[in-house]
Image (cartoon, rainbow, N blue to C red; front, side):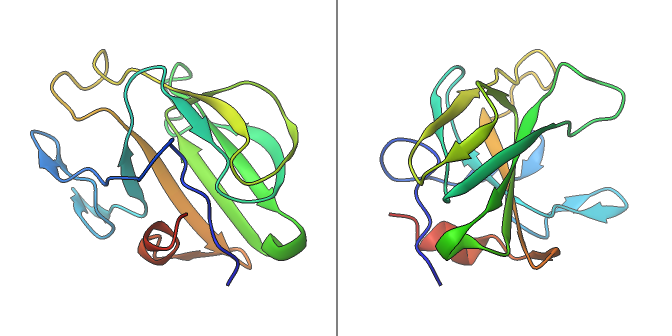
Length: 141
């Protein structure tokens, strides 16, 4: 597997438990499970592409709240078959990216979830199937 780049500068740290629950995969979200991993990021912190590919579109985590945004990256080259969704990111552009390229800035979640640990939510797909994001998370360089 090709190495993934950290989505923040330095080592990534996952969101543990706070007043809104856990940021870990499989954590309860009422009638469903959390499908991603939440990476701690301060408001307006630079968010970097974890893979080489293309930012193909903006992504919205909530149908009823367009203020919360994200990006969808589709891999190419060594990352062909991978897709990464990053939520709570204000994206800068679309187009070709390399691992570590600036793709946006972390949003401030305090207005929607007062008291939550600010973070970026990362979902990982391989061949259009959601996969446990912990493995790519662990091997980020």
